[in-house]
Image (cartoon, rainbow, N blue to C red; front, side, top):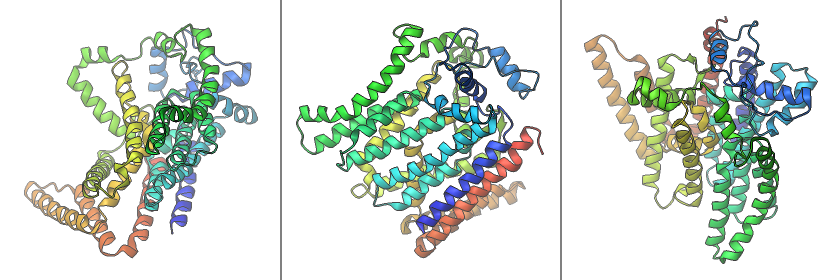
Length: 477
């Protein structure tokens, strides 16, 4: 049954990615024009671009985005991604040349990397937690059906390759934790490829090094041997990374080996956090950070301009709360038995903490309240939610949840009668949740079929968004 569910996930993602790529209007994926121009520059000049003053014009960007990228406004001035590492763009150049710069083939090439992500996410969780195959299926489903994730993977941007490399690194970390040290240098090459793709991969260097040292420590190895075990990871990674770092140091000057200081100098006019707070106040800024981060993690499309109906966000909030409460329940009830309390769980928590910390740190300086920046940590996020959701299928938890949902339905129904405005959506969520948890707990043979229904429901939701909701927001049919 698991193989069938996995094939269903793959097939569903292909349908969704095709529709997101083909139906999303040109350039209506965040930063897509700037990423496209990077590919075009390499394809037409044979050189890597250099970020220079004038490559970012906030007024022009605001105008072209607000007007929906009309034909009379060229995307050529949007070059502010020219500081990015080159690997993704180099891989896209053959697609660009083969299809003469057509946007759709480039989008589909990125979507193919998204399909690879699903496979890698499944394989990584299977290797990290072979005792829990359901966790791997659930995580693969989150990667395939999270609306914002599908939308981003179906546009031209280097996130698709960066996430694929992060997931590949998790595979090799899992091998390391199980004592399989042969070919550890491949992990080093993957890390180096990450250095050449995007800085969002960099936190995985610390995760990998902690994993190697922790495994050696558990085996009682002396410090010299522990450090030697790092060499197959460090040497290939730094050999590849150094190529890019030296180039940037020559082009932008030391110590700007990542090109980020040059980026900060060029993006004059980009909203700064200090200015935003001065204009709108601290509380309003924090409220925007909270709201936009949540909404744009699940689904806020275009250039953050396509906000969904509040009922969708109620559904996403309900799923989030169920997942987090269920995860806390799982950790509390299975202190000794849960694998999440061990080294594997700590490494996942470290990866999430580094990504979330980087996101918050960046927002101390620039107003970038976009939940998609948490996708480099989607593996630990997805796993936490899946573990939480599955926790409610255990007998005692399901009975408690069913009772709570029943009481909630009664309370909301009475309030609706009294005030004349029953919250139908929330009542349906409570009813569906209570019924599903009760059936899964009392009739374990139905769990595979309930999982199938959940996957089909997620597919239908995404398909509805791309066939009707998103096109109508852009003025389509």
